[in-house]
Every structure is written in C-alpha cells, then in structure tokens.
Length: 79
Image (cartoon, rainbow, N blue to C red):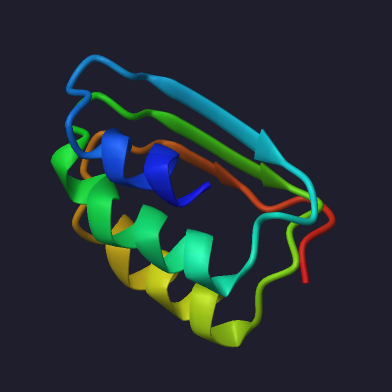
C-alpha cells in the first residue's frame, strides 16, 4: 500500500484508482493524501472497505481541495 501511494505522485496519467480492503489504514491513506496533488489526471478515487480513522479522512478532505482534477471520491464502507 505505501509503495503504491508513493508511486501515485509519479503517475501523471492515472485517471481512475480503486482500492479496497483492510490494508487501507491511516498510514496508507495519509501517504495517498500526500501524493494525490502530484497526480494531475486523477479524476476518480474509490477507497472501499478501508479501516482508517478521522485522521485519514481529514487528510483526504484537505487534499481534495488541492487536487483540481478529482471529480469523485467514493469512501464506501470505510471507517
């Protein structure tokens, strides 16, 4: 999860990212949030069945404001 999150910042063509599972914890979500603004084409991010807390959610919320290409953030069954 962490290597993928770091690679996200190096991929300017990625438009759709869907991740699911219990491995989606705060550490992974914070790394995603850190790298999302550098992924200039990301339009859709789906995190399904994640196990992150409000800290991860707040990091995502702050990042969405700096990721102008993102049009959909789906957090189904997270928490």
